[in-house]
Amino acid sequence: MSSVTKKAANLTVRADLLEEARARKINLSQTLEIALAAELKKRREAEWLEQNKAAIEAYNREIAEHGLFSDRYRDFCR
Image (cartoon, rainbow, N blue to C red):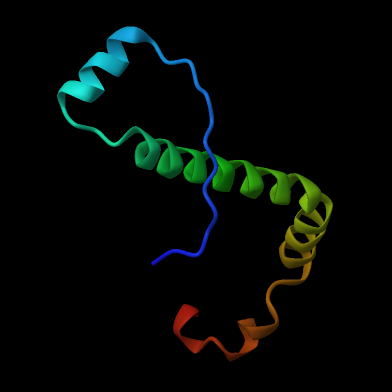
């Protein structure tokens, strides 16, 4: 059982979508939670990439210029 507190929210949804969802017995709360969690994850990832953009670019430049530390141990690539 989940210990996450749930809170009621009022939403506006297109009438045709709501009717079809109800006809197909789709759990709106569960569907919204799943979609919202996915959207939040996507946005957190985009924010992380933006916040770390300079470091990622610097690392990529370093690798392009000097290669990887492990390159000298990789016999299978030669």
